[in-house]
Each structure stands twice: as C-alpha cells, then as structure tokens.
Amino acid sequence: MSTKKIAILATNGFEESELKLPKEAIEKQGWQADVISIKSGTIKAWDVDKWGKDYKVDKTLNEVSAKEYNALVLPGGVLNPDNLRTNDDAIIFIRDFFEQHKPVAAICHGPQSLINAKVVKGRTVTSYPSIKIDLENAGAKWVDKEVVVDEAFITSRTPDDLPAFNAKIIEEVKEGKHQLQHA
Image 1: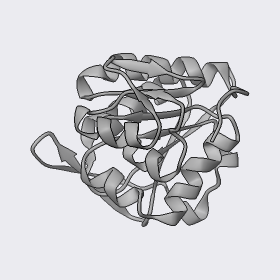
Image 2: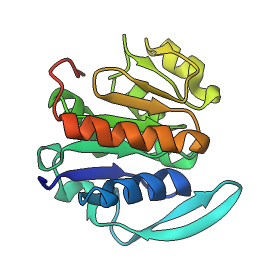
Image 3: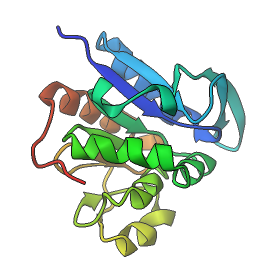
C-alpha cells in the first residue's frame, strides 16, 4: 500500500466532527492526514452549538504546497470557511489542488472557500442549505444529496452525511488524479 498524504485545511471555528471523522477515516487507511492552518499552534473546534476541543496544527500554509499532498479536505463550520475564504494563501492552496487535478472534498459550509477560489462554476455540488444560493450565484449546480462527486470534487451537506463523505474521500484518493478535475 502506498503512503498517501492528505491536507485538511481549517482554522478556528471548524465543525469538530467534520475534521475529526475524515481524519480518522484517512488514518485508518494508513495514510497521513495533516491539519494545515493559517497560524501555528492549535485551532479551536466548534461542536454543534458550543466551542469544542483544541486541535494541533501540523503545518501552516506558508510551510506547505499542494504538490506535497494527494488530496485536500475542507471541513465546514460557519467561522472556519468564512475566515479561509478571505485569506489569499488559503485560496491559492485550494486552487492549486484543482489545477493539479487532485481530489478535493468539502462539507457543510466548507464550499464557501471554493467560491472565492473560483472553482465551482459549472460544477455539480451540495452543501449546507444556507449557502445554496451563494454556490448557484458562483455558477455551481446545487443538488440536495448526501454526497456528490464531480470529477474528484466531493461535497456533502452536514455531519449526518459523514459516512458517505468519508467513503468517497477514500475512493477518490485511491483513484488518484482525475484529468477532468479543473479550476
């Protein structure tokens, strides 16, 4: 089994289960899952309706490149993607995965960062319902399904969809690069 490296990009306010459970699923495959963030140290999770645990940041954006990773995971939460979408380094990092034809997975509010990265136009996606119109205004085709895969671009709606979301992450990483994945 070849070793894969998956980047999980998050900052304070990510939905805890949407980082924790994909990370566990990735590591269960024997792969490396790095938590990447804007700053070093720790980032604080949001746990449904209250602050959750602190999670260790493995590397900061200025220490990594998309070339080092096989795939990217973007957890949701309300604060997390809103902070990432206004960070130029985060947007460049996200866009590089699409340009390199690598799998990208975003759940819940996670696709908000993808709007700013300008990678959703013409793509079929799902998300938390409150950002449906934002995605459609950015040119995406929004559907209400537990998981949607559009050429190595994986999206899901809520933490309830995590089993299907995690299974598709594993499947797409095993398939590798997708030439039709694009920015």
